[in-house]
Length: 440
View: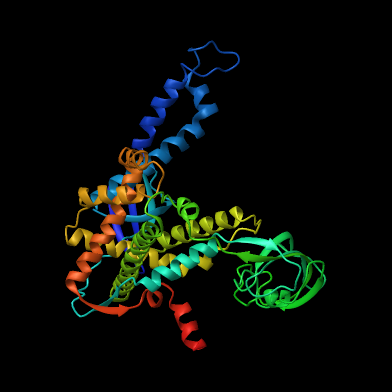
């Protein structure tokens, strides 16, 4: 077998492979001879069919099968011989040959880029330093109460914070659209559940009122077919309900598993969960900074085949999300995801090289710890632990996550990390904090 490789544009390579036709002919003869013992043809006794008859009936099919197998086998032998690591599937084209004693083909494919890991010594990352105060706990408990509020019907006009139950029908130029109708829809005024202007239009309404709202969908609305368009909603108000917050008592605490210790124990539990959420958010924000920086300092060409594959997967995932929400929207074009797909592929390749170059290995103890952290959020943690520890595929997912965390540690060791003191609200709800400042 003769092999030659020619570099093309970027990461593309064209590999020419040549092997003797005899490699095919011998296998074809062997298979045709074998078929004489197994096939059934009218007019011939089983096992007594001449090879010439079998060749006439099945020769072309057998030749195609043997050639296809030989092409695949020789391709993998050739890339192993040339020490090539292709990215994605090759495009194989047979070359017409005057010399019938040889078969030649060209395989076109992309290779993985050579990556030199950049230093992060000149980089600075910001890590939040946040302390949870009693006021933060009070605010969180108030939010928990609001999440568990009950609504009771009132005979008055709707106000901010009330729940208004409505039926509505939306039309654009007199025509309906996907998701244009709703029945018995509960809307809490002030929570921005609907598009801008909808909730404002319900303030002052009473049960039994019928209202027409002329609004406009946002330009960036998640359904592109209605984004930026004028819409009319005909709304019927069916009920106005007033909010009632639960009392902080033993009955309320019991809903959260607190059966002893009263309010003090409840506050401790709330603070513990806030701390877990805070620690996760701080780590996540630091990780995002590091990953963004790693992308910035590694300007590499990535295989378009991998980008396209990732874009297809992202489009499928988004489509599945739409379907789960009840949307029958048509298949999403993959080009919408290509920019993000390129970032994902680039980051994945660079991270793999960082792990390899620095001999970073997933610490089994950290993997076990991560599994236990995940399992702690379930009703039966031990079952979840056993499930992950007995599944190579699931354990590999955890190992990949742990490796990313270890890359974050590596980056922090290389770069400078500055702490920035922030309040809980500033860090966890920066937009809400800005709104509060503006109101002052």
